[in-house]
Image 1 (cartoon, rainbow, N blue to C red):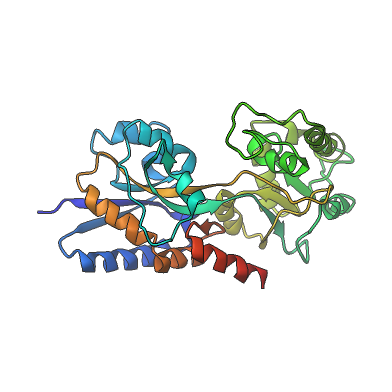
Image 2 (cartoon, helix red, strand yellow):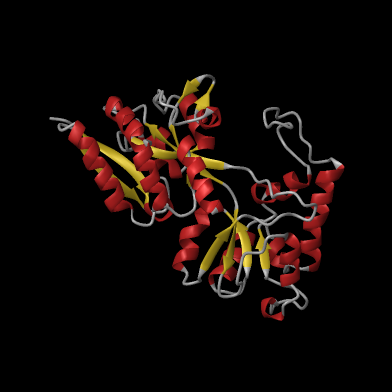
Length: 332
């Protein structure tokens, strides 16, 4: 008797209709392994046990966690080093590049299969804006439009919003101006370039938005994100910067949503945010690690990654060759 094998997935974030896609993929995998019993578990509101800090370390030893699940890249290395994830061998078929491999590697050990790449984008209300603004000068011009005036404070506007009290969100602005953390190439945590004149210029630009344009609630570290979400989902904000985790909420709000590249910042450079993503991992506590490895190989092949991308929100999958195809398609 073969033990059930659980696959964890978060429905709202990952894709709009996961059942048919994942079940079809799993049935294909089972065709090649007819004695495997595979159970698909759909998570609600988090990446199952990895959605909470202590989920896998507590649930794994108790036999309560799935065998396979998704994990943010910034969690994979730590969980692997702590002994909670099984080591994984990436397929030697060119599907990943060196940067992909780095996302799931800690001290020369690989603990997962890269799945998606995420970064910040510009969401905009297509009922209010005919096209996406391409420069921050265009965003500044929107604040002169009275339809975006904030009722609670005279002279303040919600035309464009960005959660710049959160460093993850504001880094794209500071980095675009020339600031940096972790060294110029992102590998030296002792080199923090946030006191450079260029970075200070970026801070001053953000400060101008806070002082002269945005309502006071945009300064509240604990509620600024909710304030932005609320105004976008009720249709009072024209545009805002956020990540793919906001997509499902916006799509379900009834607002007609457009997605575009974050506009060029005032110095003519691109907005340069942090990038993140998620990878498939196999629990060290799984009784079927070989089948888990097989699923990771299968779920990240070209056909399945393309199918998952086509039905996802706005994340781009980590398959190297297909990533180039997606970029070309978006440029047409």
